[in-house]
Figure 1 (tube, rainbow, N blue to C red):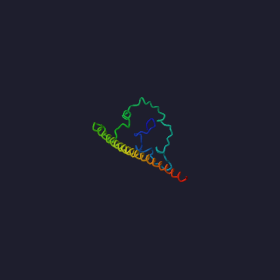
Figure 2: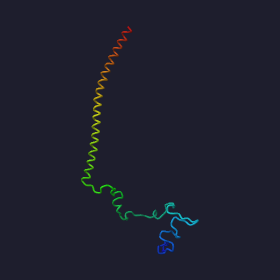
Figure 3: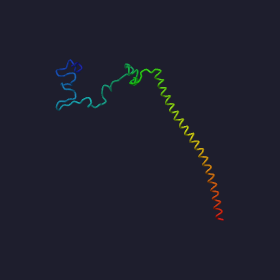
Length: 149
């Protein structure tokens, strides 16, 4: 043991290898009637060295992750360096998408034009039919008026 009371590898006795916890038994095993909680079984209480330590962030060293950010690494399968042909390929894809959308809009405009022309002809028919109906009503009233006299 060292002066601080911590067991060092030099001070271990027989049967106390590096992978065992006191008594020569592997962690998580127990003797009859004795049990020891493993790390996963312990309850986090909120009292500990990490919570009581004052950390001055300004004096901490800058790491590579701190400079570039964790999410800045290139995704696997993507090009790390984009050149002129890469951007030209993207532009061609966008141009084809725009042409598809333009063709859809042109087809819709043609439908609306056709419907508009059909609507005008139907409106004309409606007006002529309304005139015919009014003429027939007038004639019907004349017929009824003659019958009552």
